[in-house]
Structure formats: structure tokens, C-alpha cells
Length: 409
Ligand SMILES: NC(=O)c1ccc[n+]([C@@H]2O[C@H](COP(=O)([O-])OP(=O)(O)OC[C@H]3O[C@@H](n4cnc5c(N)ncnc54)[C@H](O)[C@@H]3O)[C@@H](O)[C@H]2O)c1
Image (cartoon, rainbow, N blue to C red):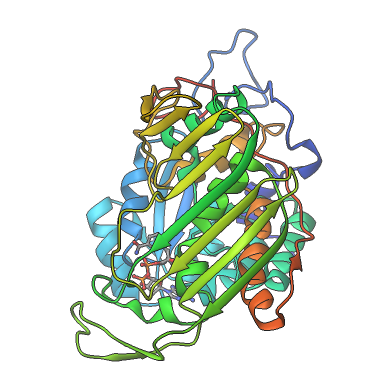
């Protein structure tokens, strides 16, 4: 069977993973066989399609416009009327999923479906010869994540996804400070995400209580991606997990009053041991009402303590209290906090155009996070530590002081 035009287009920019991690020197110049001797560099755009026009899609339609490198041209949804509504408000084409995947000009497809569809839609995107960027979680389990990674590798395409919030000014500054020794050698960390779930605000919250949901698979990606970006890979996990309430009642519109059967743990407590020796304590819960204010993420070092901002945002503040000081002080941000969802998609687009560039929101990192998330329930059931086998390369810090609409110097 001959390749579709779409495959041919994306294949012309296939990605060689062996080149990841090196600094690229290829400039953003439109490729042309008849290039003038003194070409004027022109910004080159990557055409993007989006599947899943639900709650979070608005943030992507707006966020992708921020980056000149992205040209979001079409959207699709199982419910075509949703795609039509978003297409009308954002000036893109509404297509069926099959039409979008067959569109020759689209190179990246953003997958904003619900968690149980993430891996299968990613596989369809990759088989269509396009790069796949997916909302979190990357997959429901490690086997699924590895299958998607292997397919992307075979096809020489990029796969990866949310969260991209670690590319925001808050977490980038925290990483910069950590590497500059602002708190000395990291010793320990804490991460707390404690609340009462999403049925009070999300219009269709059922998926948050099915496989791929719960506080670990829903909120864990933000906290764990931030932690592994800061501290590197995790080597083992211990934990306890439980489901405190077997049913939940939706209080948001339009489904208020409907009951949801809970299929996943909704309260987790555990520890993470990082390969660098840091020990982190973590609680993720949809079962508790607000208590005393807790830091989201705190890093404890040999010379001081750092308060890392909410990893579900791109913003600061980052606060430091050094040994001997009696109060925290704001640290100046080294990176822009005016970033939006879509930053990770732009990161992917740069890495498509600059082949040697490290794609930060990559599938290996996301797979490591999936393995960690699944390990907490495994540890709880077995009563044992669970060893984490996957590894990833810690993404490089973004160049400091970049303008808000670019991601490379
Ligand atoms: N809502 C948020 O604030 C938020 C924030 C961050 C991340 N996310 C993540 O984004 C993803 C989507 O969340 P949401 O809140 O937009 O959900 P949603 O239920 O509002 O929207 C999902 C959309 O995907 C469509 N869909 C489902 N399966 C499909 C398939 N197989 N093919 C094509 N379309 C399909 C649905 O019809 C729906 O329109 C989830 O993984 C969620 O964890 C959501």
C-alpha cells in the first residue's frame, strides 16, 4: 500500500532519537531545493491538528496561538458537534478523526481525549505518520506506555506530552537555583496535593474516577514531572493507597446528582527514593477537605530550603530560606512565567524543525512518570518497595530570559 501524502510530509521530518540531547545548530529556515545563496531566515510553522474538543481544549486553542512556530489548523472529536463549535470559535476546520489523521499538511496531532483513549489515539496518530502530543496521563500503565514509545521509535516520530508546566518560569527557576547550589546538596523533598476531587466543577467528571484517573494519575503527572525534572530519575517507591468512598456524587452542572462508581484509589501516601539519594514524601488525595496550608513541593538541601510553586501552573513564586535565616524570601525568576498550555507542543515543533534539539516533554520522561504512578498501588498491594526500571535524560533547562512566544535562543 502506498503512503498517504500526510505520511510523506511528516516522514520528511522524521526524528532520529539518537540525536536527542545535543544542541542543534540547524536554523528555522524553510527547506527549499532552490535556496538563494544568501537566504533570509524565515520562521517555519508546523501545522497542528487537535483531537478531543472538551474542557481543556480551549486552553490549547489559545495557548498554541502564542507560538508563531505552531499553526493549529483543524480539530476533531467523537462528537462532531463539539469539533464544529470549537472550529467556529477559533477559525480552524472541523474534521472527523479519520479525516484529520489523513490530512497531508498536519504534522503534529494533539490528543486531548480522556485517559483511557490516550494510548490508542496516540497509536493511530503515529501510524498515520504524525507526531503525537498527548494530555496526561501518557498511558494507563507501563506496558501501554512502552508500546506507544516503541511504535514512535519504529516510525521515527516524536511522542510525548503534558504536563508542560515544568517549562514555566516557576519550575525552571527552581531548577536553575538548585543547579546553582542555592540550597546546597538536595537531601529530601515533600509533595502534597490534597483536595476533594473534580466532581464539584468538571462538566463530565466520571473519567477522574476510572482507570487513568484518581489523584495519582490525574494530578501525579504535575508533581512527579516537576520532581524528576528537578532531581532526576527515581529508583524505588513505597506506598499505601485506598479508596475512601466507593461512590461520588456529581455536584457540577449539567450532571448534578448523578453518582459515579469509583474504580481507582483516591488517597495515596508514599515515598520516592531518587537515584541521587534524595528521599521524597508524597500525599495525593481526592478524599480530604482543606486542612492547614501545605506547601505543594518543598526541597530541602544541605544549605537551605526551597518552596517550589504549584506544578499545575507556569508561574512562581520560588522562595528560599537559607540556613541561619528566619524567613523565606522570593527569588527573582530567571525564566518567563507568561507561558500557557501549548508550550510543550511548541517544544515538540522546535524539535521537529531542529533535529538535534532535545525534546523536553518527551515520551521517555512521561513513561518514567507512568511507571512511578503505577508503583504506588503495586507497593500498597504487595507491602513491598517497587523498583523503578525506566530511565530518561533530565531535560535541559530552557535558555534564560527567552521572550514569551519562543522556546529557543
Ligand atoms: N479539564 C481540565 O482542566 C484539564 C486540565 C489538564 C489536563 N486535562 C486532561 O485533558 C484530557 C481531557 O480532559 P477534558 O477535561 O478536556 O475532558 P472532556 O471530557 O471535557 O473532553 C474530552 C473530549 O474528548 C472526546 N473524546 C473522547 N474519546 C475520544 C476518541 N476516542 N476520539 C475522539 N474524541 C474523543 C470527548 O467526546 C470529549 O469531547 C484528560 O486527559 C485530562 O486529564 C484536563
